[in-house]
Amino acid sequence: MSGMEQPKRTLLEELHAVYPDGEGAVVAWVVAKIEGLEAHIQRLEAQLAKNSQNSGKPPSSDGLKKPAPKSQRRASGKRRGGQKGHEGHRLEMVAVPDAVVRHRAGQCDHCQAGLAEAAVTRVEKRQVFELPAVRLTVTEHQAEVKCCARCGQETQAAFPQDVQQPTQYGSHFRAQLVYFHSGQFIPLGRTAEIMAGLYGQPVSEATIVSAVQAAAAQVAPVTAAVTAYLVNTPEAVHCDETGARVEGKLHWVHSASTAQATVYAVHPKRGTAGMDDLGVLRQRCGWCVHDGWAPYFRYDLPHALCNAHHLRELTFIADQHHHAWATDMRHF
Image: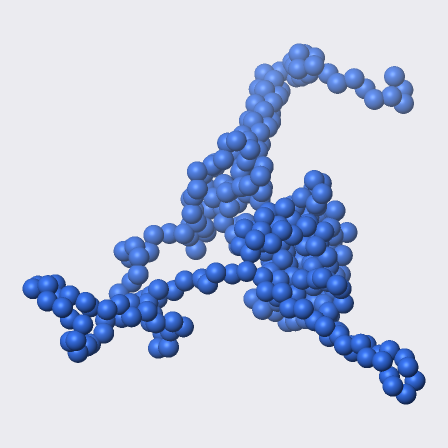
């Protein structure tokens, strides 16, 4: 079979091949096979034992066998709840309420005598914080049209710059559409339901999309400035990506952030194509913190790995392989 791959020998054929070399060769062959099988079994068991709490696997990969929650925090020894000396917070009275409702004392609780003519000695106060009844207010803008006595031509007064349609929503209402949908990640249909429920005003999904697009255009210069900051800051920039559905298809939300600034970008690809689209790593020279996913290392910059993932991996080693050093390192 010259020039062709030789067929793989069976275990029996391999054993027959080493048998003439004596007992030592046979024993060595058996030991090597056993060690190889044990290593293979260990790899398979390790693969089955990994989940979102002891590896970098996402929670969505756990399926129906979700592990019980297991915090990485160690007991502090302190009692639960607020600690001694902790400054508490509660709903405090305001000095000037929006409305005052006076409740009259008309009859004595003890002898049932009338109190209409009695002087008020003091007033006990309780305040209720409540939302007012909310409805949309409609402002009609009327532009005067006049005819010039000299030339006979008509002149119409100008409408405000932000009043461009016969009917339209105001900037505050459109800002709430953007906040619910893009700020709180509420789907279009549910955002429309919220606005109808809160204000009794039905809103189409197209109106929400239009408001989001207009807001995106307005904040584009801010996004560019934040991206430039993340490219040049000496602080470590933290990067991550997570799955998201766009029109029913899997996309990826890429993020880069410090404690003060964050940019996001949605892209069909999880790897460097999406990272490049975010516009930070391809220009950055400073430190980048991430979960160790291979595409990050394609960028020529200093890398640091996320300790949350280190803790998960140490948890796996300690639980699966029972190495004491992993437990010690996890506590450290």
